[in-house]
Length: 464
Ligand code: SAM
Ligand code: SF4
View 1 (cartoon, rainbow, N blue to C red):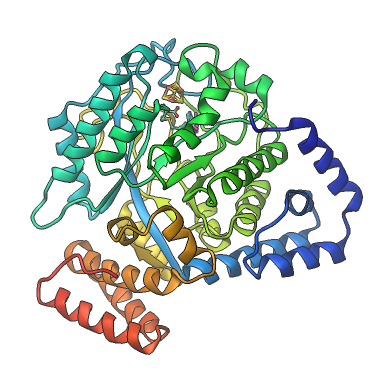
View 2 (tube, helix red, strand yellow):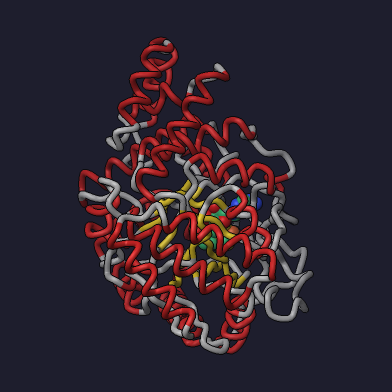
């Protein structure tokens, strides 16, 4: 597979095992806490740690690094599945072309607007549009559909509410396709390599455009060259050895940093879930334990400190609650993976891409975050202030984005509480705002007070 030197990665993993000793782990963690990231060897040393007390040290360093970069805010979003038709045949996915278990749907523009209104009605402000892939020959049709979908999401209104940022997870496109997608106003373009092991990749993607690993790995660079400077990367954990995948993902990121001077805006850590009609999910080839999963998230946070780490509802509630404290900075809530499921629920039996596990409502997740001292955030300010790509990295890398994140998080939380929350959530939320306000610097406090006052008076959508 292009860019990935599998032999070098395996050698590094072996070297890390030989060199493993407690004092070097302490040294690596001290260095990581300065926000300087990790070399591949250092990441390999950490991912090899088994000793419980050292694992706790890794988790604690990840939590410190997340706080230094982003503060206590955790951004909330929701996926909106627009189409379950797919020309590919990924053996792990319910949408694969050979799966005839249930009915598929490609939402019309009107249906996408209706789905969006249903999500606005619950308080969501950020959407990740997700789609199966069109056949390669139909790229024009695909781009046209994605762009119309994005426009429909931005157009939807529920009272004074509208979606403030749309990210998308869809098929890799050509340069011109990506340019059109960018022009439609997307925030982040997400694409997961799934696995960096060449043999596994080819085996689990037997047909369709996705069967070419190099077209997929190149797509992230094509997106950046086309002007999409916020890209999201990821691995589907469970397909191959997680240690190899983690190092390969980091090697891929280093490649981007060397070429473009910036890395991914976000990294996602999906773990393989059950999917009806997807044989590979009956027996996961390389199961990842919860402890190893926590280690993956923590090492990513230490290795790529500036990136947003995204956690989906594929994980169970109790583990998600733990992971909020280990470096995760963006989470989804009340997700459904079948197109049309939010609006009326009539499609509740439609084809799901995979089964979600954490079924808590947005308000329940907001409550848990508050209980744990995190600030639930609906902020979409960076993209709207054109703080993307290099501009974002310049602020995020030294931890300068944190002041803006905290302030915007508190303002958007206040809006959510006023407009959507029940009595108990409101009470808890307002006292969290008071408590966190005291932690801002003097100019931040002044601005926050102004914004809160404006929101009190009916104003909305204030941000820095
Ligand atoms: N079709 C596009 C693609 O494959 O890149 C975009 C959407 S796909 C629906 C989004 C992601 O879902 C995939 O990249 C894959 O990592 C993840 N996924 C697929 N099947 C899954 C499963 N059974 N469990 C967990 N995640 C899965
Ligand atoms: Fe299609 Fe994406 Fe599912 Fe593969 S993972 S079958 S490309 S929707």
